[in-house]
Image (tube, rainbow over the protein chains, first blue to last red):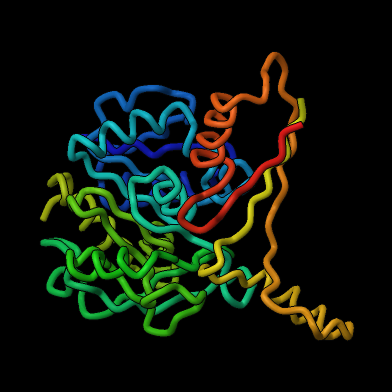
Length: 223
Length: 80
C-alpha cells in the first residue's frame, strides 16, 4: 500500500505531502519524478502544490504534458484515486481530469491565510458526517479563482461534485468553490492545503481528516 | 516561416488583470477605455513547413492543447 507524490520542477509541497501521509497517517509514500513514465504499484496519487515550471504560460499548463501525466491519466481512468492540491488542482484541470479552470484571484493578490470551509456532502467520505460541518485549512495562491461555465456548474451541483465552499470567498471563485471531484468520484482537486494542517503547531489539524477521506477512497488508511 | 499566436481571456471570463489595467488607464485620463483584456503573445519560427490547411490544423491543435486553455481563453495566429 503506497501513495505516489508527483514531483515537478517547482513543486514545493511535495515533502509536506510525504510527511503528512507517511509520518502523520502512517501510509507508505514516495516521491515520483515527473520524467518517470510509470506509477509502479502506487495505490493513490497526490499531485502536490507549488509552482511547477514557474507557472509559465499558465499554471499547470506545462506540467500537464510531463511524461508522468500519461500514467496519471491512465490510473485515474481505471478508477485509481488522485488528488491535486493547489498547483496540483490547476494541473488536473489543465490536463482535463477535472472540469473548469483556475484564474487570477479577483483582488490580484497572492493570498496566504487560513480559511473556513463549508464541507459539502459529496461522497461517502467527503461529507459532513465524516469531516464535520466546517473545517479550517490554509490557502496560499494567486490563481485560485475557480471558473466554469453555467452548464458545467449546474452539472457539478447536480452530481454533488463540490467538496468544499469557502465560508468567506477570498479569491472570487464561482459558487465559493474551494474543491471539487470528477463525476466518477476518484479524482479530487482543492486549492486549500490539507498537508499543511496535520500537526498541533499548524493552523489546524483538519487536513489529516481530508487526507484520510481521500485515502479511504481506496481504503488505505485505517477507519 | 514565423508564427505569432495571440491568446486573450474569453469575453465572458473575468479578467482581474485587465480590470486593474483598465482602472490605471482611467487614472491616467484615458477614460474612454473599457473592457480591457490582458493576454499574451507566443512567437516562434518553424522550418520545413508550408502555410497549408494541414499545417494550420496542426497549429489549431497546438493552441487548443497547450498554448491556450479553451475553457478560459481564445486564440488567433498569424503565419508568414
